[in-house]
Image (cartoon, rainbow, N blue to C red; front, side, top):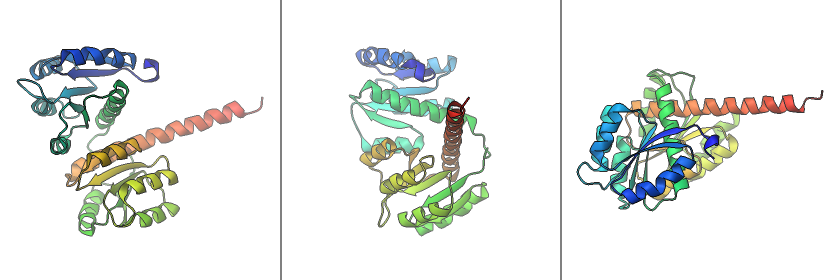
Amino acid sequence: MSGSHPTIRLLMVDDERDFLHAVEPGLVRRGFDVTLAETGMRALDILTQNEFDVVVLDVKMPGLDGVDTFREIKGMAPDLPVVLLTGHGNIQQAFETSREGVYEYLTKPCEVEEIARVLRGAAERGRLRRDVPGKLKREIRLLLVDDDLEFVRSLTPALVRRGIQVREAHDGQSALELMVDQSFHVALVDVVMQGMDGLTLLNRLSERDPLLEVVILTGNPQVGDVRRGLKEGAFDYLIKPQPVEALVEVISAARERHYARTEERRREQLERIVTDRPE
């Protein structure tokens, strides 16, 4: 199985030694190069001497806990993705740290396959962020869908000033109608809207264009909605309000994934043409 994914350098931090040694073999079999640490301070020492693609932190640790360790890591390596892992689920804490850049918040017990899936996504996000500089690498056509007119009217000019082409829709049906005659790279979709909600629209947009990357926005976070959105293919799930630069960063990363997936589809089509060609 490890051959199907590139090796991902993982730092896993948890004071529960039994948990670390139970999970490590499964992650290694799935293509992870795993380094273990049992305290936040030890994790920071390791990070000063080694590079990683992703970090998993348990929240409840003696001394420097997971949240404080996360904040220290963000100061050292702002683009390094961090996943928080805990046996004590706390929705408010999860969303507070998500504002600060935590990639995802998993609750123990969690299957190794689920951990591996989340970590692959986090590592990919980190790679895209490293690859996207301060200015846009490619043209971005963005579909902005939100029934909060004040929010849309303040956000659109800010995105346009940064080189993003924006079309607005104030409900799900209008968004789908825009998709008939236009193509977009990324859609930024609010969850709570009158009529068609954002998660339903996510599926409808994906049916229209499977390559479209959808970023979900919400001012009323619910863990169930987050998990459903990510499971159903959302590129990311962001909490309002977000600084414009943070939005641009996520939109740019989504555009890069759109480009990569489009190129992969073109390669596959070319291979089929070559394979099917008569001698």
